[in-house]
Structures are given as C-alpha cells and as structure tokens.
Length: 101
Image (cartoon, rainbow, N blue to C red; front, top):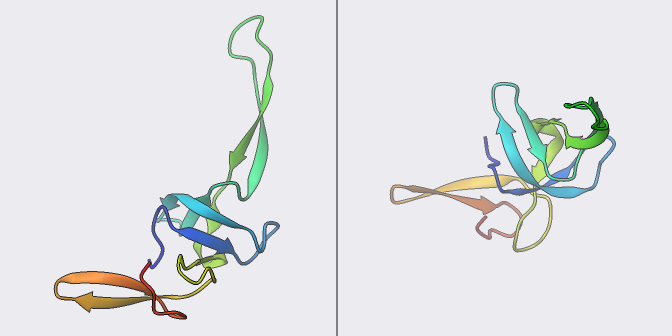
C-alpha cells in the first residue's frame, strides 16, 4: 500500500468524485479506506432507554482504495507515490514534483 492513515487523498470515482479528505482508517483485508467527510450515509438509531427519542446519525462508509489517489503536500496535485531507499529508511515522494510526502 502506498497510502497511509493520515494522508490527504482525492476521490476519483463515486458520488463524491473530485473531493479531498484525510484518511481516518485503513481496512486492509477488504482493500478499503474511510475518508473524513466523504461517502457519508445516514443511519437511523433506535432509542436506547424509555423516554428517549431515536435519532439520525451521519456515518462515513468505506470507499475502495483504488478509487482514491494521494495528494502531494508541496504541489497540491493528485499524484502517484514513489519510494526511495535512503540508507535503511524508505522515503515516499511525489512523482510529479519530487517533493517528500
């Protein structure tokens, strides 16, 4: 996986195409990510106790990892991520502007 939790990504497909957001959670066995403010659905909840009212809660749903692309912090464009080996560390960089991610 080239993208990580905390990366800013652009949505490439679906109802939120073109929007950007930060990755909140990675769901790796299914190859999905949860992005802040993207793919929001409403869920109706029942009242828990007597006298309480039910409510409508907005929840982010997972989106396929193939439908998101990382956004470079330097140039601000959606880009692919390259990996360089510097000594014993792996460094991620933007393929467009060569800046570090």
